[in-house]
Length: 396
Ligand SMILES: Cc1ncc(COP(=O)(O)O)c(C=O)c1O
Image 1 (cartoon, rainbow, N blue to C red):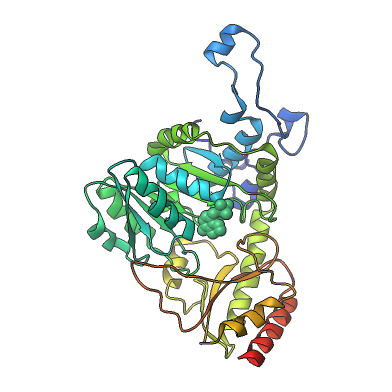
Image 2: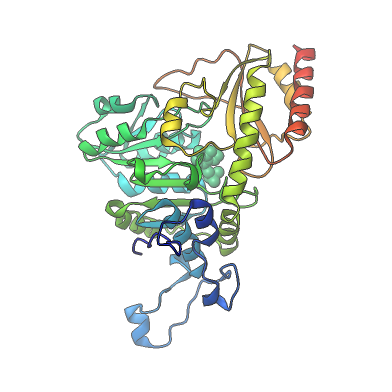
């Protein structure tokens, strides 16, 4: 697939992202006027002639390798990201492992941010290592200092910014400059920002991935991943995706494309509520600090302002020292904040974080919570948190 034309407004200027999420990957007149791309349930595609079968002259040859349904979402994400091509994976985790496997192989070395999503580390430690790839974890705030960790066989630098659980913002342009000088590929797990809040390719990323399960699907009802590459890395990504036999069922792809249409408006509300909650939490006597780069006093705020177009609804809260029982008393009876290992849906969530670091320890004053600000009314969420803190204080 070639790089799609950037969509143009009638005036000829580039359209705004809020418009692109609505229009990208849709062509109603090609589908009898249906607003949404139809869902093709397909494994087998019939070819009209032997010549067509042999020459693969139809756009789709076999369900695993794509259909108009998967193509519509790939085109939409690729257009939003400004890549050379996009593939879909059955989960965000599969997007992580695919991106890494498309770049590194036996005898190679990869650098992975110490604050990356836990299973990303598991893959490197337990599976990538079996295939002869060595991983070094690096301090996510390292910036251009990454140059010192590069080896002649370093093939990839994996970033996640802000990182899972601890929310440090990475200086991706500085990392990319150092990585590119030594011929390494920069992969970014861009799930927190979605394609709308961080322009990965403009900041030096070569392969941008999303756990679309989160904000793109947006309704906590499907697992999905996307991986988009620039021109230099697209061929290898596409080939690895095909060789691993990855594909996604059409109904889940459809939920991804449907969620995408409201992504911009949802993100605005997630950010507004998350910021208000973070400011409120900062003032609570039970809270040591809040980990959210949109807060002016956050250590990553300057970089976030420089590189991001906004913040999403996920952030961390470090409590002052308190017992596990007290935290359990708070979390067990929340009415609106559910306890679930995910985020990005319309609902608010709260979970205790278990932080596993090896490059640089994360010094927390007390237990760390991860909060996802959903789309409920702010006042109701505050009432739920206030009651939770009352239970915490009564128990401790
Ligand atoms: C930052 C990040 N990347 C990747 C994933 C994996 O996504 P999935 O759960 O769809 O496999 C997650 C899931 O929580 C995540 O938080």
